[in-house]
Length: 548
Image (cartoon, rainbow, N blue to C red):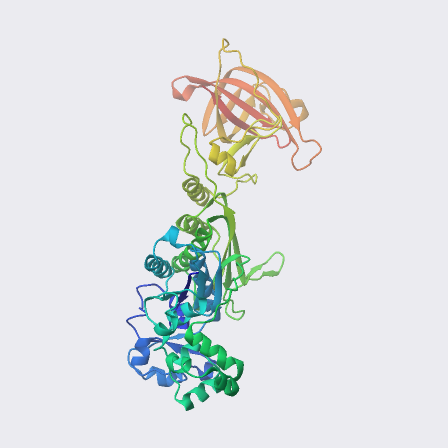
């Protein structure tokens, strides 16, 4: 049997520092104290070794702690400690699925059989230390043949401590009895007896000790001797992957908000990678700091209603392919928040990632390489930020065109590409319509569409400008004016009338099309073939395109 314990000294202090930039303050070099309690009576709850050497003691008031030169004070936030404990569990789960959350700042992992895969015990201890450092912790590692011995070794000794089977009592002999965390009554009794370390407690006779301290005293003696053998109580995996950051001062700019999102996404993706998972959906909840007496409210003069400012700004990011890259998610969130910024400063940030399996695809030998899905998604997000998400007809501006099953000319919609299509390198196919067979021997004309179509004025030789009346329908155009240029119709072919969606009043359409050969006298007699049409519902003429 082999058990390893990861212990974080001064856990509340390190948990508070994980929410800050790494270069701002150091746990090993700077004196730091954590305050807890009501605002009117804050007291020192925890401190590091540097702070204790500078004179900081637990229970000091905030004013007494501030009198110590160079001390850095932080307020205790329970959510940060919970996130730190979760990160510590995820760190241990990357080595073994059997992990026990023993107490705040300490986890025990079952490493039985891991030596064949990870190396010697010293190498495993070094890997545990490096993995914890990557998560932002300075830890002590204890490894022994039973779980409690590993826990006490990590609590009592700095660095990596290896205890072989049968040497538990000898190696733990010099540790103070406070490492066992006895009840205050038992600790006072042991202090009155002069019992101050593991060796003295282990040397006491078992029967008299039990008569005076009961079974708890006998259990403490067995722990001091390293004789307790027990099963781990595995910690249940988290139901969701979620990180939260509550800010002391509200953020009203997107750039500093990006630093906080970067840290939260890194922690989430580390937890996912430790489980060989990825994510394809991220929810971001921004709790806003809204003061009703300070906010300017927008009033609609027509309806005389006030638009309230929401106190929660929510954004959802969906990816076509699961990813483990935090930088890709950060860039997509930055582009999304730039397009949809919150209405007030941000006070609290919650990021939740939904796990998904990593998708691996191998391209064919002769298949052209497709763009990387993550980079393609960033490019599409940048295009949406530049041109907008939808046009006047509520169609997406960025995506892949899909011809709709309709006889209306230039009827299409824009769809997002699915994950399967991204991996296979295929585009969506048109549904409900088949391409007609073309005769290759016949001459082909290609029309260049104008989007949007150009507004035009059309005249006939007799009636002048054609109006939207029944008697004007079918009148042959004689002159077409568009883009400030007047052109004469040399030859016209038409009209071709079409209509559709008569059952939908809003989507109903009717049009009359002409193919005309235009001569531009103002451009040295230049000519060209164009298609023009008239909207029979509004009577307005348009130039739809030109033939090449």
